[in-house]
Length: 153
Image (cartoon, rainbow, N blue to C red):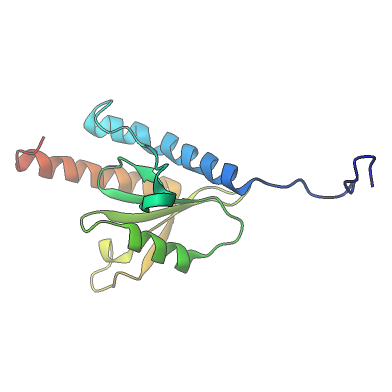
């Protein structure tokens, strides 16, 4: 032990809340440029949902089309995460869970029903972040086109 009473080989404690907040900021940094390129800068300003603890909802607020949950955890609890995002998701939102473990790249979980006919709401597929970002952009473009066709701009 050192003079401070801490074991010399003890692992530093990780602030889980800080890790989650950092993950949310990382995700916004990936998604915001795509949102801006589709809708124009300032049309949708993604931000961390600070009211989530009180009122529920997704981790990222003001995200068009998607209901986004962010996980920065070492222990993967994919089924529980999927259940959580499905409960938070609005009727016309596409659920997505973006997750990353330490020293690994971001991964995405998206609904299987968006890709595979006949799959149910409880099924999801996984992809790497590069594929997800392409999917994200495609869905935003389709949404914008639908808005324009319906005169909703």
